[in-house]
Image (cartoon, rainbow, N blue to C red):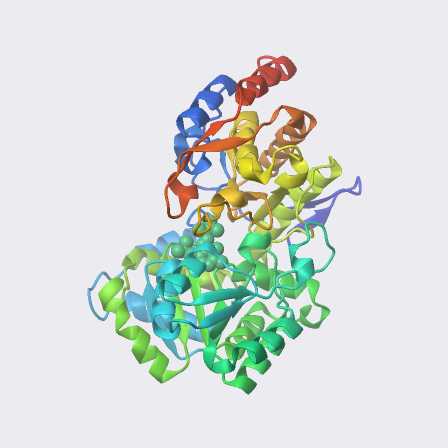
Length: 482
Ligand code: F0G
């Protein structure tokens, strides 16, 4: 395990890897950071990566790859049909999850599209611990609804609950009774629950949900995109699994699920995705859609090189030194911020450190997008970009009014094996400076607002001249420093 206690008593994560290929990054002066974020419409999605010092937008497709992944890419078999690469990837997946069939897709949302097309009937409801943006979109396009059943504590910012992603089992039983099992398209468990702060689900919960689903004849779908972090938490937070190998934990999850799908941009540290399914009929129904929307059955829209890298990346997911790195760095950043009095989601989860914008900027009303304003302010303060996960990421109600998000978070993602501890300390320092000057941060309004997924392309404008004031205060406090 890559965590050591120093002679001073301080506990730090140790990097169990060494960089042998690196990418240069730039830290622009604060004046240029202000101009750049203005040009990007105060939306971190619209920044160019050359202008970003630490890219904490996401871990999607940005995890560092190993030498063995790169080496495997050289043996990619680019055959249109029957590629050896496909069979290698299929074998790895069948082996680690113990499931029967594998269908490739170009990324996680493509899997969601196929699953929703086959399993979601108009007027049906899918039950889930918590939604993910693309999942919800595909279910609603297919005419279904999504109901969230995460336990109430999962939505509290501060908690000591080790598995905040768990479904509330009473709510699940009640929902099945109320809706009737025939009106339920499937139950979906999201590992490492993204939008509530990368919070894991427990094996106990997976077992119980699976038991209930099997008793009722309801399909259990596992979104395993963030499974690597979740595996680490099952191993380290649940005493039952202290001495269990990661592969056994993974196989047990496979045994308990009917369908597993994943974004290969996250799980497997490459780019692509896939669906695993046991049932022959479901497999044949989904298989028809793959050549139509993705590509032939033995590549599904992925390049053979990515499939080779993914196969090796999946095997590396069974190594605790590999999967511990993100959670330990998230914990390091969360602890550093908490010690400076900054509100973050606790306990630290996987994926990234999540800062609570509601508490950070209590004077900015939700209608002025506090999490989006804070993301822009982070970039001005330190050149790092996080992702808004609050009201700006929601869709307006049908009558045009705002749909206020349950949480206003800024995610500072920690892609696997990318950042150093000094970069974590730098980030914490600039966030702490901003927190001290939080009174300067103001709200935003949409200047250009797309109708669908507005957070990707929408442009915003500051209310007042707070970004200039922030920049000037930075110069006053840091002098010539970047
Ligand atoms: N499910 C979860 C839990 C995810 O986090 C994502 C993507 C997807 C499905 C969709 O996968 O991007 O390969 O199509 N999350 C990315 C993020 C976008 O930044 O958290 P995809």
